Image (cartoon, rainbow, N blue to C red; front, side, top):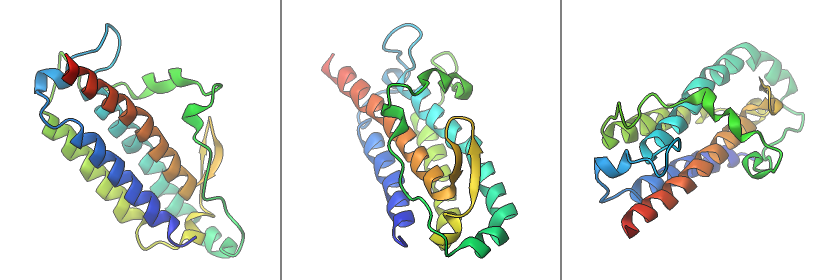
Length: 181
């Protein structure tokens, strides 16, 4: 149990690193080339991933600040550390991604290095927040999500990792397709 948070944080970093490595050698034009009309390009996907975590992370910090004492009283209660990947369930409403519409687009691009830095810095902030915190307290501190209901801070982290992976899989496929042209 005590290592699960570290494992999740390492997974957050390693899958981001793998996605960035898949982009080695691609040009800025290729990063911002949409594969089809009305489909996001690699740059937009990276920004979307950033926005999802950046917009939900303040709730994580708020929950910790407001519920820590309650969690300390409940620390000996069991808590969930895993959740099935919701993004691969047929009933999951994939259409909600528009809520985190990318700030940067092919018409308003930024350098890939900026996207990488923003994601790395945000993940470092997430790591700094979670590191050193008692998993029993994280597991007994909750946020509410309209799709997932009441979820603890460990599961919240895991869902964010699943979300990143969903879109990093798109990045891998798109980078491969660009290279094969």
